[in-house]
Length: 390
Image 1 (cartoon, one colour):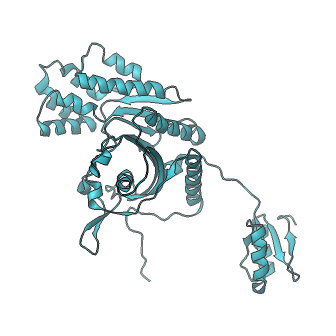
Image 2 (cartoon, helix red, strand yellow):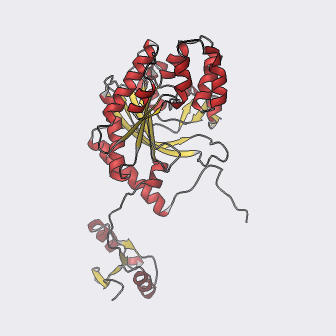
Image 3 (spheres, one colour):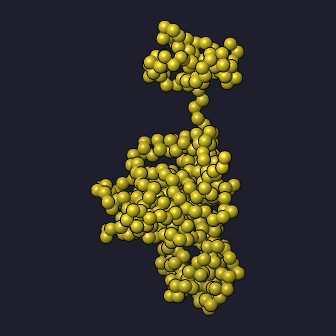
């Protein structure tokens, strides 16, 4: 028989891992529901136009044609579908949403990442206050304290800081893109070659230090002593340092600032943040402000902040304990199905034994140190084995 494997980049989930992941999702949803976040679900398929802010080819998305020959995409992102949803419904804003769902991006070969990922997240739409960013940081801190022993580090940046520096130096779009690419990838020799043309400007000292502007706020301030930034860049820097300072007030929270990192997504417009633990190379959390996102779908933009949580990655590192209960089995004969149904209405915790023979059932139960009950001829529940020692 021909063996059919899973498509590359996908995996089946079962047993302990699947239970742990579902338990994590359940606990996270319960917390957000208590905080009055509105649940939102979007379809797996969206029209290509929803993702105009993405380079779909570079992102390596799954694309196909519908019956009208229009291109549809397996969603590579969960924020943009929510933005599309808000323009096609009459949901009153401001509003706080949460979601849990799968997204699809074809991972690069040998990257170790799957093409299908489960993500949870929150979207705070209609809020211009800095409190929206703090709501996200509070959630990250709660997860860090509750499930990760306070190990999460926050990395704070600003989506417009890099552009504000480069716009003050040149109008050459191609050159700016090259400098950004080398800066973000930390390819220092090529970066140094590109900025050499600015060595006679007042910004050159900053440009030389830029790739190293990563660390605690005190270290960043020390490296920038004596350096005058363009007005707009200085404003973005002050915003970044201010929220980083606030984040340090969270319980047992480590915070760093990175001024030479790419925004998590191209649609961000303000403060961005990521959360990670040292032993994991990928980020567990990422988000930020995207005040112009809804403008892609409607004339009226709305202030908004969003954050995604990598559920697959989080499930690998968290310590979530499920409530342990004594396992108990119920043995029955097929013609006792009515009595079984009545008993399960009273107590759903029974696991039905599907063995035909009671003696085989006893062997199974003893091996698992469980309790065994059966339906008697009178239709009553009788205890057969209390535990493996009986």
